[in-house]
Length: 418
Image (cartoon, rainbow, N blue to C red):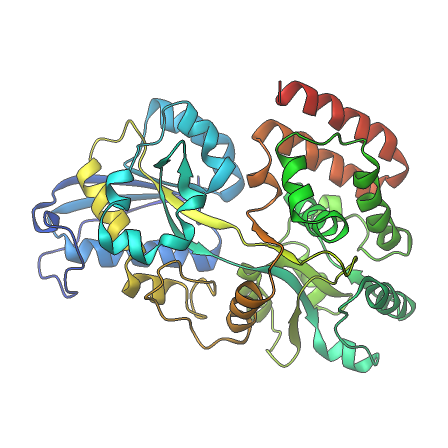
């Protein structure tokens, strides 16, 4: 737990009220637990608390920001034993265990309000389980390949669009003494991103979802084909050494310093590249290359969310905070290039004129015809995702272990999906 910020804002609200008939009467305490612990997200959640507090001067808001990785292990305990009024989490299958355990509040009433039903329609499916809605999204973002455009130019390379071009580029980069990709797989999930893309490009979105839903054996030859493509990059020295010892942030300097030329990552990484000293002239973005031209491109676009715990004490204030979070004005502000640098979920929001936001918006709008996935550890059930990511990291370090890894994952599949 990194810190606790308490704010009790004096009277004299300076921002006009947004919505909700009871907002002026809100009082008491509002406890918010957040995993927005990296610098840019942390500034965003603190800014939202401050501005919401100005709207509700009689409300005492207590914000607790918890390290993102620690949050994942603590959430079940605090939802059960000491629930806040609002908590961050993730959409789709990832919220399933807490819905099934009765730890998240059904907020279908909020989704029935015209302002939310119309403006957030595109994300409603990701927030729905058993016909009810269990949270609201506040941002989503594209994944793709961020690369050193200046080094590519130095080596006479252009962004690859096919797997053949990808491998040819990588050989040139390796021959120059660099790694093609940096990655920090210490916390496993970054390897999940690689598997998502390689599997969706090798076998298609529908197959990937069938695997996520336990309908395909991990020992299936089509899964092996995905790993065979992955191994081509591993065997040619495409990834930095010892990546299993780095977090994703600790792997950033390899690209900033030019020891690696690209990073498969979400758009939340852009502020970190910029803070590291890379200019937009040095940094480029391209969609993960095609492997099979007959397969429509599918993308990862994870959706981050806010929820009201079932055991919350101040659900009225919590609902009003969620209305505030998804309002067009707030969505435009928090997702702009100076803040999260991601895509707003409210259709009435403005998208900041940022090179990478525009690239992601265009890609997801016009060239993700195969489908949009949430991410490996959100699309697969938690137990399968945990075992899967351990296996994926092991494969990246010890690719000769593939047969054993797939056998273990298949045993886990047969246990998880019974």
